[in-house]
View 1: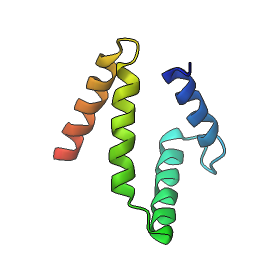
View 2: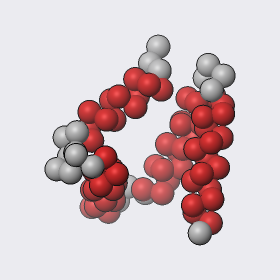
View 3: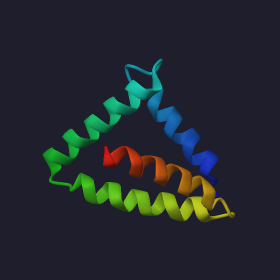
Length: 83
């Protein structure tokens, strides 16, 4: 069974392929911007994909009694979105 640590490592490998791999925050920002461009050109609803991804994240964090991980990330994101 894949763990959340496995999922994070897979994503880190993807980030390392970005031009700004030496700065993970910039690499992630660029990757998300590229995803937005891709969604725009292919008529994929990025916000819908993000909502579904957040649902998957929550489910995966609750696997193995790691609900606090989701709550921490969700609370931080909710506070940031409120401004």
